[in-house]
Length: 139
Image (cartoon, rainbow, N blue to C red):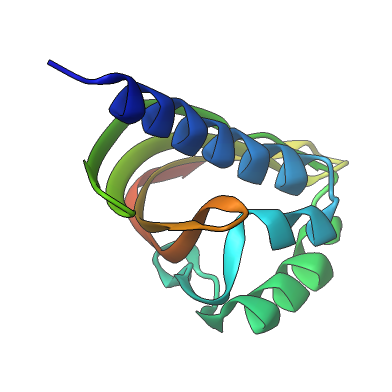
């Protein structure tokens, strides 16, 4: 049975994941500073992206994502394991991305976020993220 601390931690981590999606989908990349640790390692290579430390990956996101007319993240199946001030997670993400205005093409991406979290003085943060590809399809 979960105690109140674990319930609170789970909600906080899930909100962190929502904050990530909101920052990306709203194109407010500086909001990611409250999602990742400054030294976080991020690996988006499974979907054709980059890998590196948070500041470099944040700059890459701010350069690349505006090229897409629209995109959105839908998260689910939060599988979290919490151990004190550290946690791991595997979260499903459905991410349709509009590739072009005319002719309209949409890339449907299904991925898993494999994350490591750490509790900081400012709350939970992602210290490591690796994307695992499930599928993608252009329609």
